[in-house]
Image (cartoon, rainbow, N blue to C red; front, side):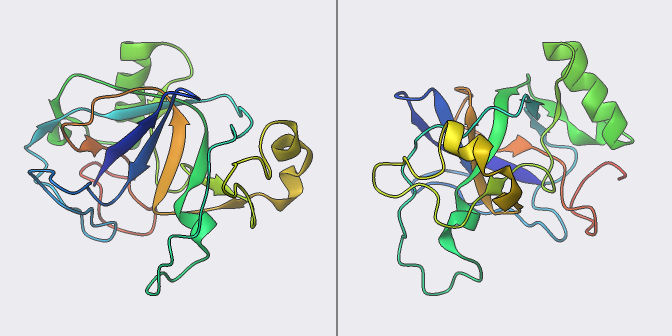
Length: 182
C-alpha cells in the first residue's frame, strides 16, 4: 500500500501525508488500505520514520466540512510523532517481511528508522489544532498524553520528502494491502 506527500509547511518543517493524492497528480489517486493499490513490482521510495515522540507543532487543523467522513476531522490530520524520510525507489516485492523493510530503513537512515506503518502513523486528540493550531500543541500535547488516540487516513511529520510519487508503507495489520508479510 502507498501514501503520498500532499503539502509541506515550511513554518514547522513538516510534511502532510495522505491516502489521497493532491489534484493534478499523475498516478494512483488514492490508496487501498484493504487490498493494496500498487503492483508490488513497481519501484517506489519507502516511507521511513524515526518516532521520537516529538510534541505536535502548532499546525492548523480546521474542519473541512466533510459530510462523508466516518470519523471526527482530527482523525484525518494526526501527528506522526517524529521525522520521515524516503529511500531511493525499490520494488516492494524484494521484501519478505516487515522486518526486512525496517532493516532497509535502518540501513538507509540509521538506528531508529523503520517503515511507516498504518497502525502507528497518526495520533490525535479531539479538539486539537484550530485555525491557529495552538490547541494541544507543544507542551500541551505532552501534558495530555492520556487523551491521545490512534488512527487516521493522513498525518503530519517532520521532514521534506519528495512529492512527485507515492511511497511504500506498511498497511493495516488486519488487511492484505502490504506486499510483504505482516
